[in-house]
Length: 120
Image 1 (cartoon, rainbow, N blue to C red):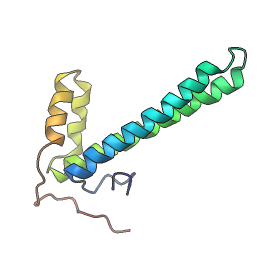
Image 2: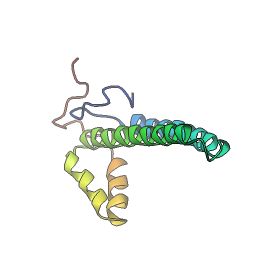
Image 3: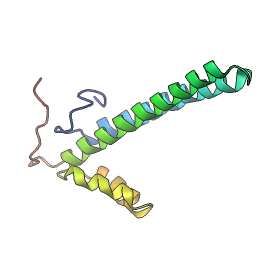
């Protein structure tokens, strides 16, 4: 459910869907990046083309992970009855991340103005 409607922010995501999706996405992304880093270090230093391909692959994998995490957090905030503007707490170095994690762990509110499932 974490990747369903990945680019639709006007929906909701439950606690289990978000946290298990985050865990799975983090593990898969870390494994892919680890394989690419291993390939990068195994290749000879004179092979610049494959080094660039591995670097771009790592950037794409990490970027896709960040997009999925950001949108999943927005949907989780919607499910808890908060607006997406709370994501701006990430601009505050440590305190903002702690407060955002607490908000992401808050229970579901049924009176949220966002739909449970977006019609396709």
